[in-house]
Length: 54
Image 1 (tube, rainbow, N blue to C red):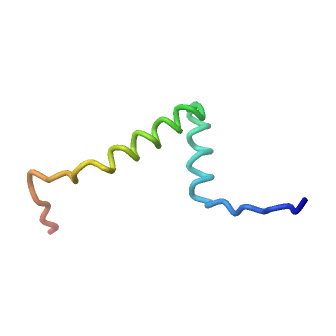
Image 2 (cartoon, rainbow, N blue to C red):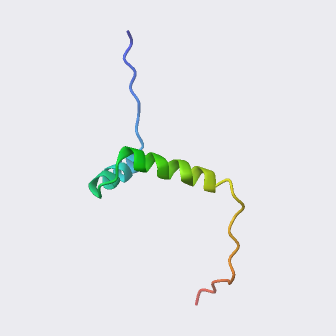
């Protein structure tokens, strides 16, 4: 059987390590990602004001 190597995105690895460090479970992270996926399908937020730099 041929061995396959997968490359991992270092930012995702760090993010998941941080989640584990603060005590989040795999299921909690999975739930968050799935709920974020659903909310990204909703219409974009409209700001009630504009930000004027300087």
